[in-house]
Amino acid sequence: MQQTPIHFMTVREQAELLASGEITSVALTRHFLDRAAELDPPPFELPSEPRSDHDGMLSTMVTIARDHALESAERADAELRSGRRRSILHGLPYGVKDLLDTDGIRTTWGSGIFRDRVPTRNAAVIDRLADAGAVLMAKMSLGEFAGGNTSSALNPWKLDRTSFGSSSGTVSAAVAGLIGFGIGTETGGSIVFPGSAVGASGLRPTFSRVSRFGCMPLSWSLDKIGPVGRSAEDCGHVLEQISAFDERDNSSTDRPFSFRVDPGSMRGKRLGVHRREFLLTQSDHNRQVFQEALDTWERMGVIVEDIELPLYPTGALFTTIVTVESGTIFEPLFTDGSAAGMFSFNEDRAAGWMAGRMMSASDYLTAQRIRSQLTREADAIVSRYDAVIAPTWPNGAGLREVSDGWPIPARNEWEPPEDADANTPRLNYIANLVGHPGLNIPCGFDPDGMPLCLQIVAGPFDDQTVLDFGMSFQAETDWHLRRPPYPWRP
Amino acid sequence: MCTGGGILDERVQTSKGCKMTIDRRQFTKIAGAGAAAMAMTWQQACTQLSETGQISDATVRTLLDAQGARGIYESPEEFDRLRRAVENSARISNALRAFPLSPDEQPLTVFWRG
Image (tube, rainbow over all chains, first blue to last red; front, side):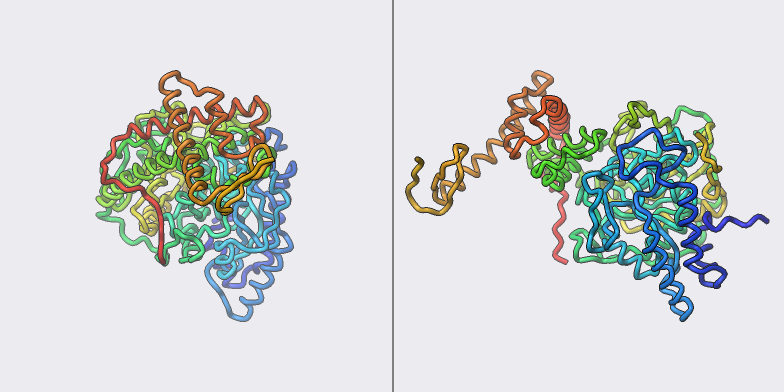
C-alpha cells in the first residue's frame, strides 16, 4: 500500500509521527518550508493587486517566517524529548491568514498600505496555538482587507479557476500540501466558499466561540475565525485548541469546546436537506454527485428530510451591517488619506465603506432587527434536525476571468452570482448571519475536475455535530484524500 | 475680528478661521441639529432614489462633507464611484425599510457584562 506523503497527511497522522519520534518537528517544518520554497515561491511581491501573471505559482504565502518556524520547531522538539507534549498540534507547522497579528512578523491585512506593518503582540488565536505547541510557519495571502472573490491565491486544481476570496491562500495551501493546517476567517463565507472552490475541509465555528482579539475586524458582529485542514477531524483538533473565553473580545463566550474524535453511530440522526439549493446547479452530473453524498448518510441510517428555509433579504442585511461597521472601523484610512493607497481593484469597496458611514443609525438598527427575527426562525428550523445541509456552491469553481489583470467580478462573498435564483434562500448566508457553525467538505468533482462541496450546519455551539457528520462521511468516502496533481493544471 | 460672549465653555473654530464662543447648551443644540440634518439628508437621498432613480451630486456632497475632509473623493472619477455606492446603500435601505417587522422586534446587539 502506498504511503501518503507527509505533506498530505492529516493532523492526526502527522502528530502520530511526531509523538512516536519517527520525525522531528524541525524536519517536518523544514519539509514544509522547502516545499513552499520549491513549489510556491512568490512570483511577485505580496501583498499585491490581484494579477494574472502568477507564472504557474499559487501565491499562497505573503510572508514565510522561516527563522521563527525553525526556532519554534526546535523548542517543540526539546519539549518532546523531555516528555512534554502540549497537544495533538505539538510540533505541527501551520499557516495563518495574514489578518491575525503576529508579534515581530509583519501582518499586512493583504494591503499595500500595511506592507511594512509589524505588530508587537499576538492575536489570541496565535497565542493559543503557541500554547498548544504548534509552529507558525507562514502568513497566508488574502484579498485586501479580507475582500471577497479576489483569488489572491490561485486554485491548485486549475490555475484559471477562481479560488474566491478571502481565505484563498490558507485553503489553497492546505489542499496543495504546503502547510500542516491553516487558520482562516469568515464574515459572510470566506472560509467555506474558498474551501469549496479548492476542496478543503474548513470550519466556520459558532460565532463567539473563537476570540477575534488581534485579528483585523471587518464586522464586529459577523467576524469568525476558524480552522482549515485536509479532513473534518483536522478542523476538530484545531478548534479544540483555539476556542476559549477571552475578555478582550466583547462577543467571546465561555463555552469550551472539547473535541470528540469518534462520531459514534449516525443511525437515527436527522439531516435536513435544503433541496432548492441542490437544484441551483445547471448540471445533471453535479446533481448526481450531491445526491450520492446524501445517499452515503442514508446508508448509515441517517434520516434525510427536505426542509424549507425562509427568504430574507440576506444580501441587503450583509451589505448594511458590514459597510456600516467597516466604514466605522476603517474611518482612519479616510481621515488620514491613506485610503488612496488601496489597490485599485478595491476602490468600489472603499466607496461602499464611505457610503456605509452615511447610512442612518435607524437603517443599521433595522437590519439588526431583521437579523434578530431571522435568528429566531433559523434556530427553530435547525433545532428540529441534528444538522441541515446544502451545496456550499452549486457548481465547481468557475473561470477566474481575468480582465486588465484583475479577476472579475469583484463581488463580495454574500452577493449571489447572477445565475443563482435570487428567490432561493441560501443556507450559507443565513447561517453566517445567525452565527451557526458550518463545515465545508468535498463530496466529488464536476465534469471539469473541480471539487464540489457540501456545507453542514447545526445549531449554535453544536460544532461537534457538524464535525460528526463530516467525519462520518469522510470515513466512508475518499474525496477529501484526492490531491491536485503537480504541476498545477494551467 | 470675531468676538464671542457668554460663558466660555466651548471654543469652536469656524470655517473662516475665527473663534466662536458658545455655551454647552448652544453646543448641544448645534451638535443635535447636525446629527438631525445628517439623518434628514440620508432620508432625502433615499427619497430621491425612489422618485428619480438616482441621487443628486449635491446630496452626495452634503453627505460626504458631513464625514469630514473629502479626501480621495475630490476627484470626479472617485466621486462618481461614491455616488454609485451611495445609491446602492440607499436602495438597500429602502428594501430593508419595506421588510415587515413586528414592533416588538429588538435589534440584535451585543452588550456583555461578563
